[in-house]
Length: 392
Length: 140
Image (cartoon, rainbow over all chains, first blue to last red; front, side, top):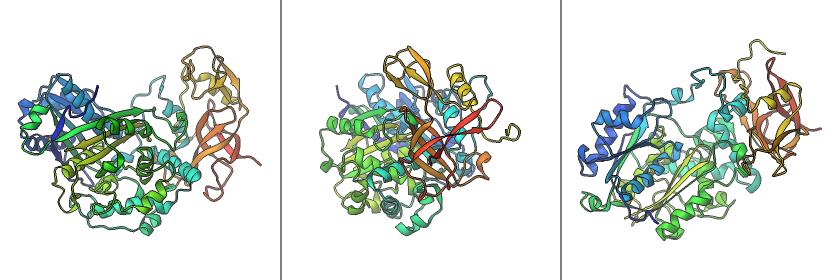
């Protein structure tokens, strides 16, 4: 059983992130990126027969696929919310392919994004209804101690990684700097034109020690959509299809206290499976496009995906040039750290960038001879993982 | 006991967790224990998450452990902590095995003073008439 070449991405749509909604609504953003992706794929709305939606982080509703399907006048035979946090976008890609392979549908529209900003994202989200039993374990056993959401979780991971492996703040900062260099070649990035140095990162305010402001992702407004189609439709698409070559998913829950170790993630399980399905080795990969809510996320992803030995991520990022022109191109759109994190569209930005690079339309930041991309989505606190291998 | 004016989120015990919070109120750390596995676990459930067995009992823990990891909060999400930054959030690994999300108290929030694997013991924070939170302080 394999998903290799079961489906291809033939269309992408992405809104340029902005710091605030500027009058845009989430439904309006979804419409904008869906239209762009459907047109990019050379399709029309009646041809879309599958619809996957990632729930907005700062808005709550039930039945998002029905809401969006009605709004766009799309009536799919397969609809789902994919609620894997930052791993949702990558999770959508293989779910779309599996649905296509099963014969349920032939063209799946996958939509992410929201109208949000830093203030909305960080506003306290009190439980809406005071119920007699609030049985969410993290609310009972973590929130009373004052964590700053996932910032605290990743800080706890980074501190332990530093303790176990001697990882330094300068090594982590290098990741943010190389990604910013990439963003400076991407006019759509939120931090385009604002180059930073390792010293800038280390001089930025500590939000949750050991994490500085410039190694923490910025919540913003934006959206991204892709169209995943069956092989026969892929052959008729206007652009070169980007094939799903490998996919795997691994989850371990949501609370750090429940994990045997916090410095190794389930990427160690799903990345090797995805690479094996694709039948490729690490050295074959031309582009690494992996979730980067924090610098530590990238470092642990590189280790757990097998690009370097466990615990050696620090020296590894120092020894390699992670820019689009470097020996190990990584997050060439700037990553979410420099591109922006428009809700779960942040995770989708790693997919859309891989598609652009593989189709040779990444402009100034185009990676030469880019044929194979490793993409990873990370949800929760390095708990929910989806690895993909995409190729031409 | 600061029962009035406590502005931070409080845990709301459920039928599955009430025994834990009853222990805390008496300044005793009680944990669920799986008789089949011969091991403690946390957070409380009516079954052992390791073997999915339901032959469990409650046992009192020593209250001693070590800091598995920590972070220093220079910013707070909830306004209840706005006046208290910097403070320390941490995962403490108890002698009995389980890890708890908690605060480290009784030491300056300075990464040069707090260390991973530092030994700690429970320090009770009576935050309401019903709830005492287990926090931890360095030993010695």
